Length: 399
Image 1 (cartoon, rainbow, N blue to C red):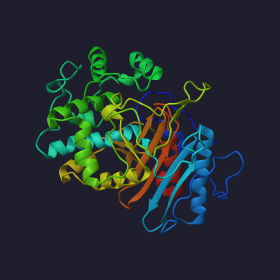
Image 2: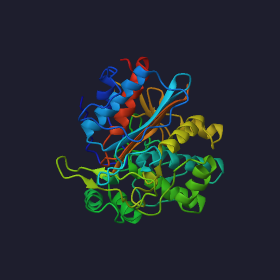
Image 3: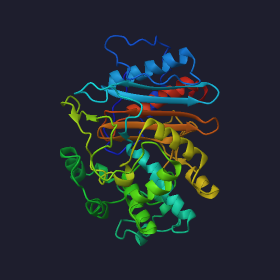
Image 4: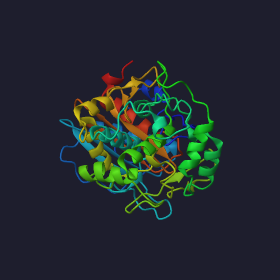
């Protein structure tokens, strides 16, 4: 089975193509052996304390093989943890095409727009500290943005601000395509936003648009409210306090070892490029961060439980507006958090890497997917998560 590859340029957009995945039947269980032409397994995982049933493992691994083959993905790691049912934690394929090194569970990857969950949480921590208010206006922090006097922090967080998405602007896309490690200063982003008309009036009923610009602006707001760089604040107040393994807000284009390489094919049919090095200041608070399978598992649980936040701020983060993404799925967006058929989390896409991280809060069931080939708008991680979730919980995805 093949799936549509996204063309929208964004640091991890969830798109309406999820409808196709939702409409597909779950794959039939398959043998665990890797057939010729399919993705090879990587370094074997440690034997789980509570393995999933063999038929479930076979079904998940068939999904992974199909997704890697159809998307040309060199390597992937998948973690599925279901309290009371078991777990599967496994890496597949290669982390480095040149050396042939296997993709391993500890490999760091860029998590792209999963960064937004950290940025939103940072904003809510500042709300709890009394340094920021959800009704504060954008104009007070970043003057000159269209509708800035009317746009609130809350609207930036839940994507109802209507701010033009700079990642669709040719000035940006041309620069980023040509040289991902090159700077694209935030002042250039703000200049694009100041001269670009909004998509809709802030808070207009029924209007929602995923826009990386919202989180670039939130980064400016957070830095002013916190009095320090957003990466410093996130690493101290979130990563450090939760001790998230392998997780960081990078300051240079390199990924700290151990790490996978990241690959890109754009446009379709072009030679594959190694795009491991990306300037983190370009995606910034919309998509700069790095983590591992274990780091994302821990973060998914902390998000779902509202750790680090007051009850009021956790309620704010999990108040979802209609995301208008798919008639086949129940989708919403909170404060840096997607909700899909009761699963909460986020996906991410950036040059070289594609990710998804979701938890079902009522049971603690968690699914994390990381892959090492992507553009800024592909969705192999999200598609893999949706197919696994449907396999595990078919009743939640019935039409």
